[in-house]
Image (cartoon, rainbow, N blue to C red; front, side):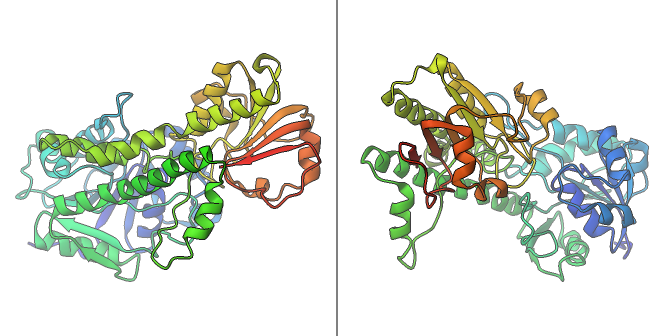
Length: 430
């Protein structure tokens, strides 16, 4: 079977994963970047990426064509799907975005085309769920008239070291010939740093365990955090001593959110249940991490109670709302768990974040986000929830202006441990 050595490629979904991939591919191939969000496409056409993964100049000079018109997907050789794979409110895999993307592609699919999925799924979804959808929409047969592939995404939002052109890319194809074609395509953008997996299901399994493994390791540290906290110890002191051992895994405690670590274990859990295995370790880790926001809020509440503060008359400032530092991404942020729990006690809670979009905070959480420290203060408690760079640079004078005398500083990220605060200020870290 002959393939075009310079294939025309369509990338479906231009978020944190799809946009950097499409930009990289466009340096070597003819690429259409497709997204159903018309506002997103117009923004990118104007050289502005709200995720801040791609610089404006790069957007303005790319050869990629941007489109929200489904008919632009016709006559492409390769389709790469990077749509989200979230979970439902019951923490079950939500495959609707994958279904819709597959139906759209299927309507324009040509013979010999390759459809590659990058979205995180559990083994079998590409061939047993997406394949039949493509077949019904196209009246073509997978493995005969068109071909399937899988190449798990490994984008880490805000990470400028492990970019798409610097990481190992795993690829898998429906046939060895397809796998080789994908090796060539992806290898063009990362100096052929490619691992060809045994088959598609193997690649799907590899992806879904990557973040589940990290989730479990963080859960262990979070559980130890609650234990040593009851002993009057700081987990950061304990970890500083423990990591001097050569083979100690240095995971940090905290609120585990985002679109990967906080979601992917549920896909693995569903896969386990599909083969009649109850995923005890995986879900135990999830429960521990899901409860971390309550632990932080309850501890803050207990400490404020000890200094005789009444919740209904107390004000708390939370610093940081995004799911991780130095990015605007609010998806699945667990800071909101802390905020909601504190509000349930009766506290007035204000939230400051220099990175998040105030419109997104209002739309998703009904929070009127503070973006400046001007004209605010007189708080009974300040919670450092996300280690954005501006927060790392705060000095004692900043806290003096924001915090009441004798107030509480709850430093979840251990950012201000070495600062000297005014006498009477209470300081707590995990």
